[in-house]
Image 1: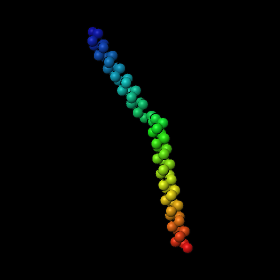
Image 2 (image 1 turned 120 degrees about the horizontal axis):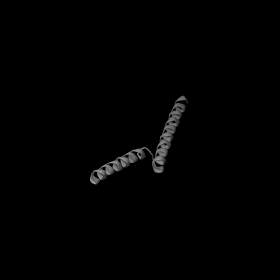
Image 3 (image 1 turned 180 degrees about the vertical axis):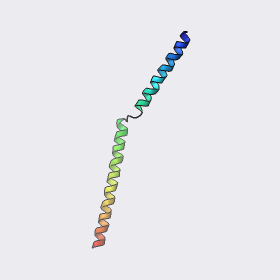
Length: 63
C-alpha cells in the first residue's frame, strides 16, 4: 500500500515541477531583454541610415 502511495506522490511531484518549468519559460531574464533592446536599436539605426542615404541620393540627383 505504501509503495502505491509513494508512486502516486512522486507522479504528483513531477507534474508540479513540469508545470512550474513550463510557466517560467515565457519569462525573459534581464540579459535577454537587454539583447532584444540592442537588436531593436540597431535595426532602427540601420533604417535611419538607409533613409538618410536615400535622401542624400535624391538631393544629389536634383542638383
